[in-house]
Image (cartoon, rainbow over all chains, first blue to last red; front, side, top):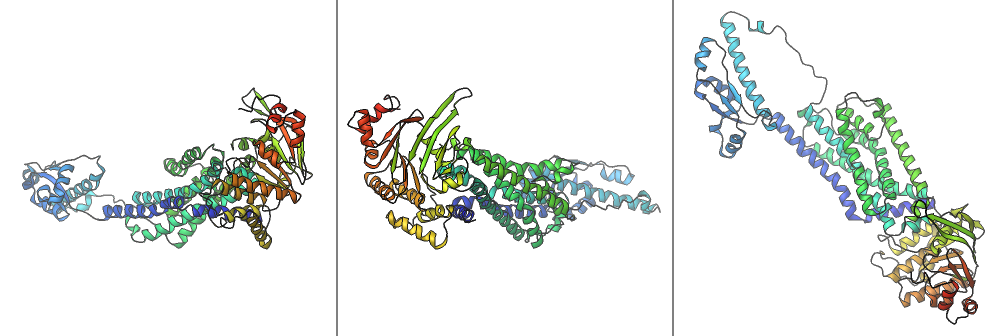
Length: 387
Length: 249
């Protein structure tokens, strides 16, 4: 116990005195909340507001009433655009062509063809086009309804069935995106924050010739590995906590319910997420130590470990594309936690069995990594690689 | 007391080619004596010392420290050992005092006894001024002192040094030499590997010459000179290892 305490204290002293490495590790935590804030702000703006749209309209004079309705809904002719927006909308070039026989066809009761021409694949135009179409349809419907009423027919006759949408998939795609980002970010934070400490205390110590000295001491390699693991994962947990606390603070400035998010980063949620990611922090640090202890140099360790960072980034994204998720995905490290976070952000009840299961599996794999690593540190291969 | 009996150790250089690093090496380093190991590069000195630390396992033969078989209970054996390794690095973000404290704790010292032991070693090595500075930027001599202090803080019965004077100036070498002599006079066993003949001649009570993984000769420096019929230890050394091959290597 004296030995373990000494090993641990020394690791912490070294980790916290390397201020620059620590700063880099924590930058991740600082960036996440800013990203999430900016992202959700812009999304809410896009979703909720109806900014003015400027169209390149030909034949404006043929349909003054239609133009009037469009104007009432913030859709204007390009000629009315203020100078600062003119060029932008000119480039976007949404054309609305009203035929010269509009009035004649309207009076005769024939179908009028209005052409809307634009680059429909341009994402920025989705919302304006949707609004223009919607307004024109509404205008058309109101005319149609009036025609029926004039003929003494109830316009409801045209709608024999009314669909009552009840969407049970709670958050819409935007909220999904933000929660996916947040989930990814905290997973990344778990992997990134402890990274520099893990490499420095293994491959770094080897390169500074202090590892051989330590291995010659009357202390078991298991204790050495465990002390290094505790230190690296503590830094990782600090990173995760910082990310979550700062994000919950920054998210409190925006109303996420406006984009259909059903989650709220309150204290309980943050505590639950920390609890969920606790095993992941240990797992990530163990994996990083495992790889970098066996690397021949600091540089090799760095490049190999940066491959491991791909793990938290790839798995959640890959999971999105699997529709029928096999049950064992619930239990694996990273994927299990990722799926639980998904449920949480969707506002579903927490599956405590999966929570315990994935925690146990993650800790189990961590224990295996630590045991194998401490055995490997006793092997001649590692000793011979020392110099 | 350190006893090495008939150590054999070979490594695979490639898949087929085997290199015999140790080929039946035996010697004894007694308490109250400084025993020097001399040998050309590649003679097996470092392999022998690493076997002694329990880092490598011998193919056959045994290393015994104060009656403890290293291969069977390496941790107990290491507790009897102070080590000054071949390449000594320092934890550059810790102060000298913290490093000595760290190694003292690893050897199971704690509380008042630990502080006493650290104070004693710092005083003996006259490093009061260095003690609370971070070791980053220390000179080679200062680094040697810290390494020496952390190896000796628990007052081990046996002390093994692997080429400790490499890169040291005259003053630092003298500090080291004086300290080793003092430590020997207290009845400890010191095993010392070096390439500097004058140093070995001046310091060692007994010299072991290792060549090709086995013992080539042993005795006091004077005995070795007589045995080879040479006046200088250096000439005796070259003659005793059989050729001057390897000396230049």
